[in-house]
Image (cartoon, rainbow, N blue to C red; front, side, top):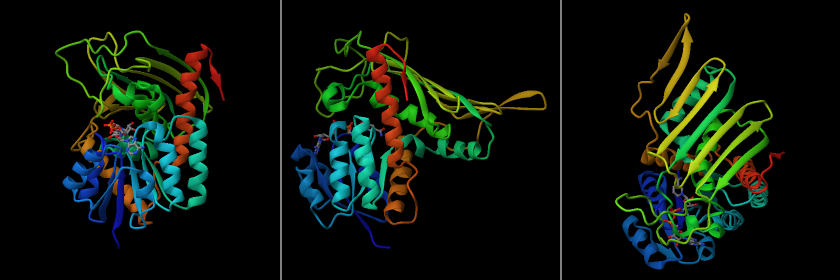
Length: 351
Ligand SMILES: NC(=O)c1ccc[n+]([C@@H]2O[C@H](COP(=O)([O-])OP(=O)(O)OC[C@H]3O[C@@H](n4cnc5c(N)ncnc54)[C@H](O)[C@@H]3O)[C@@H](O)[C@H]2O)c1
């Protein structure tokens, strides 16, 4: 089998996990790195032995010696770079979120359709070991009909600043950055039901709280304190099959501690996916909390990215079909934009 020649576009924080995973895959040749910041691209290229460095992604895409790209840039360029890459005949692994609007998502979907290439969205949580194990139980009907899900990702202090908190480049705050992961995870495990209506709220009450001292948190590669995004969002999403999803996410909140939880409830069983996989069921008039005996009950970043990237390479080689296709980006943008729209209007949004 010939190697897949990879170009990584965007050499900031998350590119490190992509690069590590590509470097571990024997079917990959790391060919090129591109970043607006040339020094950053050069440093990564040297560390990972990529032969070429670009500062303009269009030049990287014009390179015939590249078969596939990872898009690890700010959210505002995901759609344009993905479309240009597909049109240049490259397979695409695009970081989440797919883009900033439903219109952009539909444009990317149309180009994927006529390109014949793979576009995989970086919904990395789907690739965690705990989720892979759980999916087998759900597909075998162990939870029955899943009719309710609840997802929380609350940071008490953690606005990453820079592009993340600049609405023009990010498209939003914790909802589009963190909410996308947990909404997708619930929606995927619920069997991807169609959205019926959304009621959402978004608050800008606390700013980025950069004055707080003695607590460390994740920051963008080019950190600054400019902040035009919400600090808390919540929503109730109703689906056509009658199921519902309740979600809340924050970059900062007057909370005692951070909270991360993803739970689903069916008529035969329930599950806590995070913070630790536990399956809840009933046998002989007794409720059982079942703990699968697996190496990792919670999401592990390095393993999740390795699984995601190994799957992407198998798709590029034609052996597999991606489990996180562009269509799932369109439905997700309907949900995220629907929440922002409902928050803005103060009304429920119906589809
Ligand atoms: N899957 C996950 O768990 C996860 C985690 C963090 C970030 N992300 C996503 O990854 C993407 C990047 O986030 P990050 O944390 O690495 O940000 P970052 O600020 O650390 O790095 C982004 C890099 O992209 C470069 N860049 C921006 N636009 C570019 C363009 N048009 N051409 C070339 N380079 C460009 C910037 O110069 C910067 O070096 C975002 O879309 C984010 O949502 C995903």
